[in-house]
Amino acid sequence: MSLKTGTLRVTHNLTGRIIECRMRGLFGEADRIEAATTIRHETDLAAGKRHIVVADMCGMKTVHPSIARHMGEAIGYQRTHGCVLCVHVSDDTVQRLQAAHLARQYSRNDDVTIEADSIAQARSIARSYEKYLDDPKYRGSIREAIPSTGAAA
Image 1 (cartoon, rainbow, N blue to C red):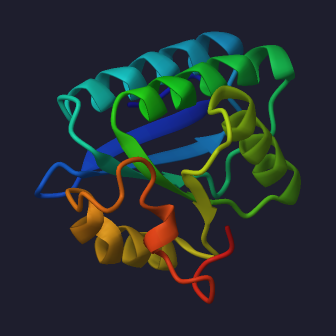
Image 2: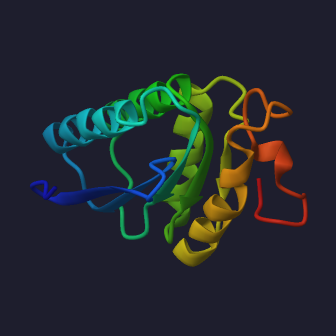
Image 3: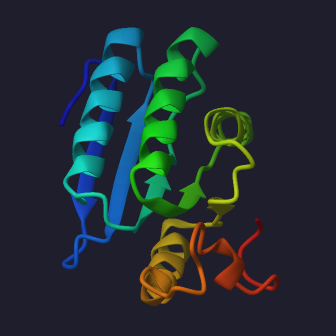
């Protein structure tokens, strides 16, 4: 999906349990609303099943808080509709901080988000922990299945 100034591409792995959201550029308010709607729709395709999200935000620019709110609401939606692990990747420190803030604001006690250093690492983490999605030991987030020596939490 191409947006006016930013782009969003959403893909699912073969099992449909890993959703990758790739965001690039600077999103205006209309773009962000459209992107948030798309993210909600893609989350709904998981049909309430526990899933992992890889949020690839390399190249995405920080946005005004009134615009970021739309993304925060989409994050909150994902987390109440089955997302039990979200792996963030960003190449911009300020944007990374904004995404982390939104995750905490719209997902109380954010126990779902971890950060990866690269998209390759994020995908590897997602694939490695997909096996925990149906493990009854992890009733909420599966982040605790990740050793503390892994990606930064």
